[in-house]
Length: 332
Ligand code: NDP
Image (tube, rainbow, N blue to C red; front, top):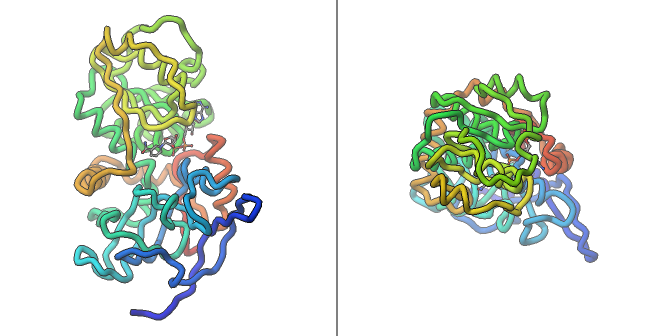
């Protein structure tokens, strides 16, 4: 076993008055939490939850000082678990890492072996984090739609220029479906078309409330990252028997809907949770990502960042201002 090593991390602290602050610090390996596997982290990302954890109040952080970062990819450095050996490439999403257990905003992480997944062949650690939790969740959402049958007609993706939406758009288009991408940022139209969207739907079209619980049957499926009024509205536009994978609440946690789309159109509302996915599902989703997500399109989504950029990016993602996926090179 190597002796104590120093490394950089973004550490969130809380003072006696409850005020939180996030700054890059040098810490050492003895400070890492308990776990079976120590990973030399290559990349992490910025997800909506990370924005909450870095921001004022600490969001979902359960213990201080804390290293946020709900996902990471890297190389196993030491392992007490027979499934992993030094040199193995691994990826982690979920399991409250970055909230209750120190996460990926550091050059080293120590976690439970059960939380890791071996990186599939053909994906680099950087590509894995270009996908990250958002992209992994997008894949789970698509798999759930497939399990229930995607109907004829365009598949709607809401919050399309965000992380989940961008990856969902690229995957669904690559599978041969038409994609209608809902965005509040018209300037992202070329970007979304480049990912494979065939139609851009302005956010206002779906944000306007209507008293009609049912509208024209339009969408063959939907990946919804927005929730709130937009989800309520689009439920009434789904084709008979079509499904909506509900992923997020960027537009609100309320759901001012009626039961009519479920009763009269057999619409399925599928909840997607990426955090507690069992190992086999995680492996299946990562294998599908390697197969069904064009890596050149993934590259178009990437915004590179360093640990020092994180406080600003955390604020941006909470304002819905991040385009695509932020990939944090923790060693830069
Ligand atoms: P991003 O911030 O990258 O994307 C969210 C997008 O939603 C924005 O880019 C914007 O897209 C749109 N949006 C933001 N605010 C509003 C609003 N008020 N009304 C309508 N649209 C809005 O976040 P992610 O893609 O990483 O995550 C999206 C959601 O999914 C979050 O709520 C997140 O917590 C959740 N999530 C859930 C997971 C799960 O396991 N269920 C896993 C990962 C994420 P545009 O500019 O194109 O309109």
